[in-house]
Amino acid sequence: MRETLEAVAAGDLTPTQAEAQLRGYATTEAGRFDAAREHRRGIPEGILAEGKTPAEVAAMADAAVDSTGRALVTRADDETAEQVRTYMDQEHPEATVDRDARAQTVVVHAADYEPPGVDADVVVVSGGTADAHAAREAAVVAGEAGPRVETVEDVGVANLTRVLDEIETLRSADVLVVAAGREATLPTLVAGLVGAPVIGLPTSTGYGVGGDGVAALLGLLQSCTVLSVVNVDAGFVAGTQAGLIAIGVDGAAAGSADEPAADATDGSPTESER
Image (cartoon, rainbow, N blue to C red; front, side):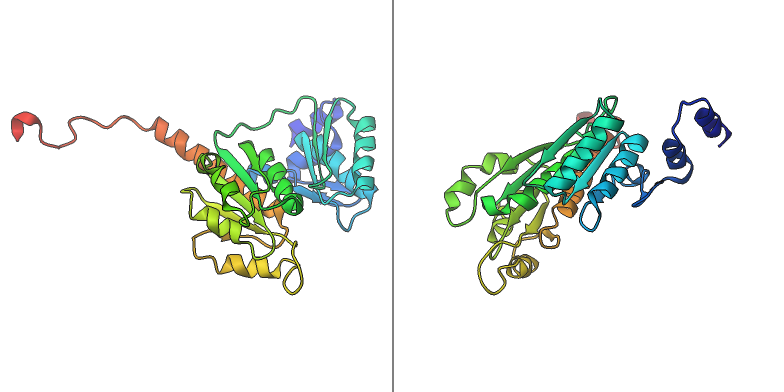
């Protein structure tokens, strides 16, 4: 603790950074930012913009960058995204600010931020352009965990050829997120074609009764093929789960590489003993 306090006194740490080190979170006018989450979970805390003013979101993003070197904002409208960008231009002028309007995300990386490297592949699939809001949110969030992320868009089951044309990419993945609305057949279909885990992401696109995502969610819960399911439009949750699985895949591969080679004299009979 003394070293941290001395660093603040010397100007080497900001009060936000010191609080994050001592308590694991940084306090802002909009609440407490969980700066230690990525060390506990492998995924940074997402700053949900809904329900907050643009100024509050910008303040939390500032605390995130100050304490962890990056900020991940979700469900950010244009006004909020512009407020975050303006704030960063003032407080962190060297930082990069990436906005995905369809995903409604804003990702900020400090100039000296070093992204994690995860040797695994995440493929995010969407049934149609109308599902891109949730699919892209999942892709952005998964990417912040460190794996390679590839997107396959507009391959809905109304024409199965579109899915089969991407089969090589689908089967190359270590984990897939598949977003679909209507009755959400696509995740079930993909899960029957690949060996990797599939996360079904129902979206609120469709017509009439159940068209707000209810039919898609219920369809995935009744899936004939094995997959996991998140809530309607929950791209953040799907992306987080995909990122965590990718981290596990990378860790398992690294552990296997570190294991000593099997001993040839492990008790099995040799040719002369047979």
